[in-house]
Image (cartoon, rainbow, N blue to C red):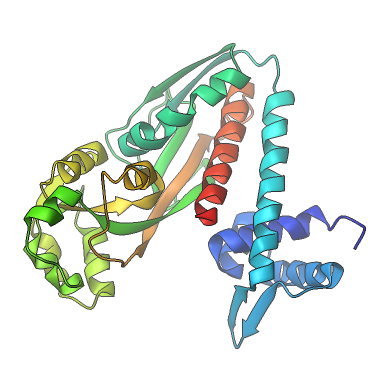
Length: 301
């Protein structure tokens, strides 16, 4: 083909590839499911090759479709990055960001220099909330919140869905009893963040007694959970989004290859009153672009 497909169709494909479902893509794009399906069918027709396999009610990307979707994501990321670099030149002022401690220390702090490179005249400050889903601080301009996405009277955008997997120090495995499968989880101390929900979900998916989640140690801060895990004190239900660096470096490893999709996710949350502020818009645009880059990099692994 010689002409460029419609931007809406490309965004529909990128969103479907990221979420793995038509209804989630429709929700993100504020379209109906039939509209997203229609865009994907038109894109297949224009491209001349099959993007999707449709088996009953199940829809998934073909190998060609996945490769094309990754290229589309790179292109959209480039466009978003260009907008952040050029459209907001000359932005001044200040922006205060509230971010969960684990997200801040394990991911945002390693990326935030890029925002200052683009917007050197913006005064940026980062704080952490008492609760991961707290968006109540009136002094904060932008919230990165971990929750279910329901914050009335706020503008809410999905940043990243989260998959959890058991993670622990390789030292713990080297000195402990041999683990042959998920049923051996009882041999390890469970490390929890705030509540037992994530371990209960994992145990249920593994076909084990969810009451086992009531054992272990409860922490109020993700940094404390990961510090205990890396010190060999137990096994944490790790957020793969923010644990990637520790996993790549071998500081944390999977004792079992079984993940769960969390019912919670990371969201960008801004009050209606501050949504049009130029520094808020600049930071929000940069953040979404960086998360897209991170997601694209993980899919290449």
